Amino acid sequence: MGASKPRSKILAFIFNAFIPGMGYFYVGHVKKSFLFLPFLALIHYSFISLFVYYVNPMLAIAHFMTILILYIFSLYHVIKIIRENNVQTFKINHWFITLIIFIPFDYILQLSITKFFDIRTFRLPVSSMSSTINKGDFLVAKKTKNILRGNVFIFEYPNDPSIYFVKRYAASENDEIIYYHKSLFIHFSEGDTYIQSNYPSESIIKLSNKLWVINPYMNDNKGIHYAEKEMNVFELLLSYAENNQSIGMTPKYIDGLESPVYQLHNNKMNAFYTKVQAGTIFMLGDNRENSNDSRIWGALPISAIYAEPKVIYFNFTNNFKIDWSRIGIKINKNSI
Image 1: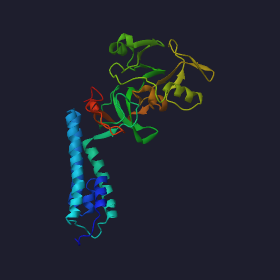
Image 2: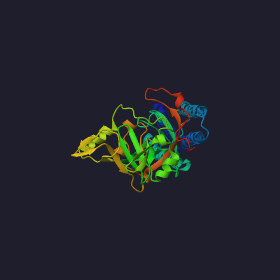
Image 3: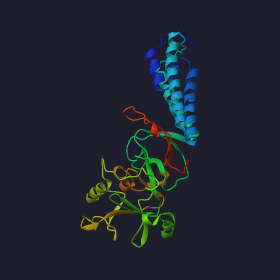
Image 4: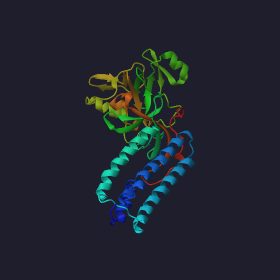
C-alpha cells in the first residue's frame, strides 16, 4: 500500500454514477467497490422477483425509493471519502485501471445474477403492443418453458437476434391463418370440434369447408385493436407483394370471404394466407395495424422465445412523466 495520491471528486462522482461501486475502487476502497454493486443488484432483483408473485404498486414504489436512496448515498459517500483524505490507493490504481477492471466485473456480475434469478426487466420503446403494453412500460419478464398460445412473449427478432421484440403468440404449428384489413381468422390445428367447444358461435365462420375463429384473443384481451396511425399492415403487405418482396403470408383468393378483391400480377386475391410450419409459431402485435410482426417477416422459430413478461412494474415516459395507473398490471392473466 503506497501513500495516498490526489483523487478527482468529479471523476469519483462520474464513476459511481456510471456503475455504482466503481467510484469506490477509484478511491481505493476495494472491498466496498466489489460489495456495493452486488448488494445493489441483489436488492433490485429481490424486489422484482417478489413483485411477480405479490403484485402491489406500493412494492414498486418501495423498490424505486430504496435503490434511489442507496444510489444517492454512494455518490455522496465517495466524495466524502476524498474530502476526509481517506483515499487508499495502490500504485497501479489509476482511473484507466479502474475502467479496465470494473467494467468487465459489472458485465460478468449482471450476466451471473440474471441467470441465477432467471428474471429480467425490459422497457418497451415502441407502440406495437399498445394498449396491452404501452411506451414507457417497464416489464418484469421470467424465463419459461410453458409457452402457451394466446400469451405474450419476449423473443429475439429473427432478422437481428440482438434486438428483443414483444408480441402475442397467436398461432402454433399447423394452424392456418387468413388476414385481411382489420380482420384475422385462425383455423386451429385441433380441428372443428375443438373450435366449436372453445369459441362462441358468433366468433366462428365457415370458409373452405372448415371452421375459422374470427379475431381470436380480442374478447379476452381488450388491448388488441386495429387503429391506423403510423402504418397499415394490409396495404404494406400488398405493396411488398406487388414488388415481389418477401413477406410472411401468401396472397390468396378465399371463396366466401366478404372482403375487397384485388388484382395482383394478373391474379385476384382478397386476403393473405399462411399455414404455420413445424417448429415455428406466429407472433402478432396487439396494435394490429402498427406492428412489425410475423405477417411481415414470417413465423418465428420457437427456440427464439426468450422470456414471458409477467407484470408491468413501472411506467416512465420520454416526457419524464410517471403513469401510476400502469403499475401492477398483469400481462398474461393465467401465467402468474
